[in-house]
Length: 452
RNA sequence: CGGGGCGUAGCGCAGCCUGGUAGCGCAUCUGUUUUGGGAACAGAGGGUCGCAGGUUCGAAUCCUGCCGCCCCGACCA
Image (cartoon, rainbow, N blue to C red; front, side, top):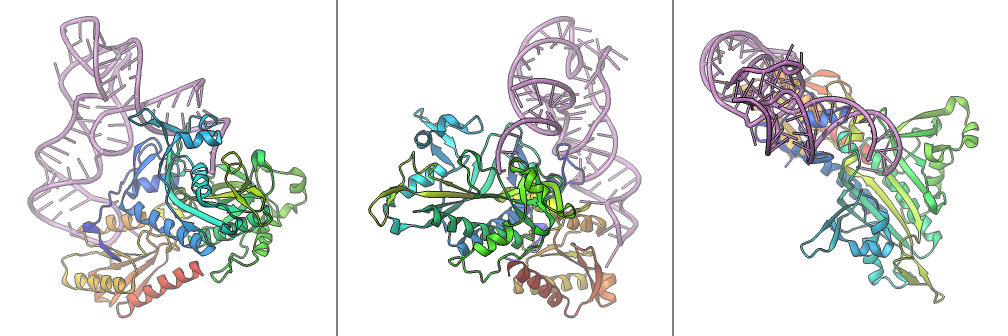
């Protein structure tokens, strides 16, 4: 249902900022009633936050499907025995939440799923003919961080999309990697986020096939160095053929210098022209990684090749921090009054304020607008409460809906409603006739542009 | 895990040093007046003062232990 009345919604906003919230995203998520903390780094998702989370999740899902990945769902609780196989049950530190079931068996709340997906795939994949495969799931994970902070940006429980690729050769694995690379560019763009893929630390495995996708923001946790000319590059459009050659896309985005501080190369950096050097903070929202046979080898996940040999499957994993993205989005888009949600992830597209519920003309007009939005599939939050005007405006700003339509007796007398664009702050009077149509067109155009 | 800080009403805080039976602002409820950017006045409700021991005639306040939360650092998506 596209229309929701505030009187029926659950929107516990806070006028004052809770003491623990240090950065904008955390502050606004608490204040606008999106989340409520239940323990350190563990949050309940209230209706407003839930709506954004679901939208982000769906964009991620659509782009994964487009790239050819197939969705499944693995459990949050895993048997420890699985992790004995890879050797990580002992190797993983105290971030892994270990629990025992009633029989005293070792269990754990999954911090990641490489072992499990490898077990699933090896069980029934015996031939190179069954590859390539890309499988993903969107699931809650838990890492018992020493120090959770910044709200959902670094919680202990978090929602994550994880894709795992399985190929019969390193050459094919590279193709899988490129599919995810291109899919990530699209995914973040659709959310109205500008991200840059930067070289990441490949760890002991080596190679150059690992990138972090970072949102450039003041409150980022990682230092990145990049060539300014990378900003604003072309993102592959909706007609992109993911089964075709994606090397040009990869090249477009990786031929200029971009790296995290961990892999920073002073020599290469020195060659970047001074006026193009950008050194700033970023929020990591995605990480893609080709790791070869790290898990398939110890777990004996193998296929037979055309010439009859048995080989370990070549694997990669590709994560997107779904819940973290809420924080990153707010860090990237907000002002003093609240978040400014891009229309594709906004909890509602339009906020409709009735300044005088009970006034027949105002009520009728609001209901008419509400119905028009609903019919067009434009999501509207209708503030039908009898709260004071100032409170309604402030609350709507705090919610950050892209468009706010204000209806009041004064405007009606003049034959107008007020239309505010939350992003730009622009306000204008709209003739009542055709007002809904104009805003609907605006929303639909913007949505189309973002998903193009 | 090293260092620091904080737990008092839904939220933000005072009271603690110097023990005497809990307070302010916001929010909530009632009434009146208001009504286009988080109203005014009057009244009301709401608290095991994080938990457990101890000292004392008496503990939010002093002592001990535990728990929780936050900040800086190291670590991490």
